[in-house]
Length: 424
Image 1 (cartoon, one colour):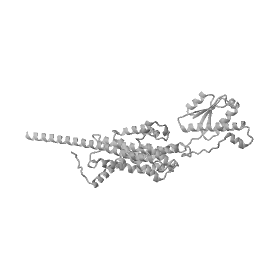
Image 2 (cartoon, one colour):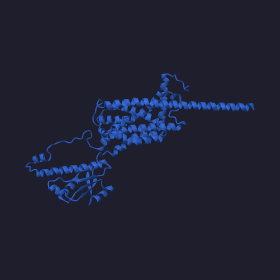
Image 3 (cartoon, one colour):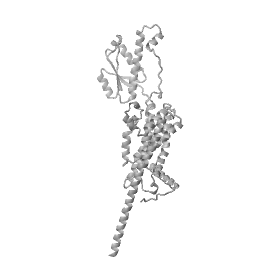
Image 4 (cartoon, one colour):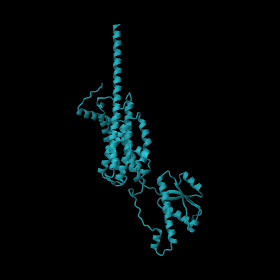
């Protein structure tokens, strides 16, 4: 026997949905933790992250040189490296141990090691070797040190080819040094920087993670305030699972309609990231993505018993989710098992669709499979949210009935004691 009436009109259902929506918005604005993850983090964190990598590349990376050759060729190699924009020769070390000590003290980020037979091998028309040691703690410095050494070695090699070719004209020397002319064009990342490559994916991932964190914190607060740890309070307006899911999801959608537009439209424009997609194309992708994230967060929130649990869970999987999107690690190199796991998260298809549309110029039809997967996830997680919230409603109703029965028995006992005392 239900403690609430089961037959209500459509207008009453809409009123109940509006009531749940108002209550959820009120909880969002009065809960500092939820407010931080819904508003503050999406506003500030992308700006901070984008500002750090706004220069895209690093310049004048300090390196140490171990020159055991002390020859004209080795000094020329060092001068050319130092003259580049990316590398600065900061220290000269006597041996490799001294250079490694400089790296361990973070005075330099890499080492150029020139062996004693460097000049001898070149003069004998043999291949010379320069060893490059890099600190891999930061990939930007590794890229600058390594690419500078490669560029200088190629240029010196071209000059040696010109000398030994026996050419008579400048044109013959150019063909000898570079028989196949080519133009290097950086596709989808004109600046060749880290920010334009990874940050668009991070923006989409931030949207999902903050949404899950905020919904999880709200669920944890509701459980902690309830005597029985129920997620859904006992109230006539919370009687139908459809009204509960619709009201709560509408509140989250209203907040993240604004946050989503800010993340994918304003932040890239502020930091001059590549933007090739129109707002209509982005809207086609973002609607199912935000819906999938909302229902995914509502489903996960039913597993949250305490507020702190959701933070531990999200922080643990954040780096994994970035890798399985195929942006920071090639999608073809991801094992099939992990690719299957990645299909459970909306960020996987959201990141791929957004990067291909906004950075590579793909059309909606080109990413139709990703958008279809997002709609499937939205429908699947909507059904899952209805199931878990239906279970929570039944649990709340059962606890309410048990509480009501307990109060009735307690009242009956008091009446019996009162009657017994009156007979005496």
